[in-house]
Image (cartoon, rainbow, N blue to C red; front, top):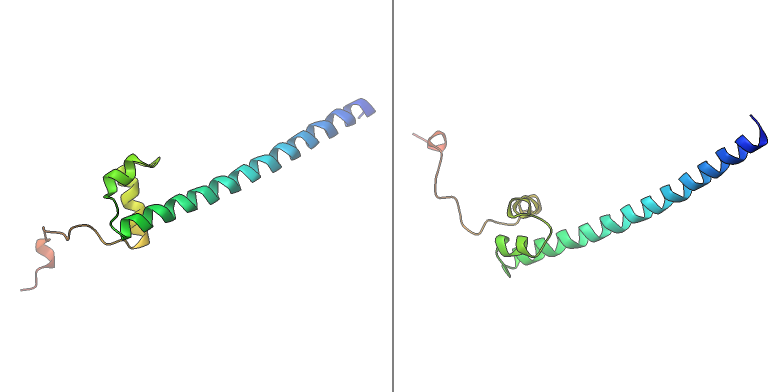
Length: 91
């Protein structure tokens, strides 16, 4: 390998290292923002400040995803289930 090839390789690897560091930093910022957003969604759903549909309109998620976030956090549903499975009846 010539000196010129080594220099090009070194320059390429340095560029990749810099861009990888910037990417990881951006990922960390994104993850922090996502966690804050999820915490706010959970907070407002728990406090019943807004229904899931309205929360979805003011977030980057659709109503189904807001529901999944709420369910994973243990937010109780607005209404209890009214339909029961025939399998759950005890005879």
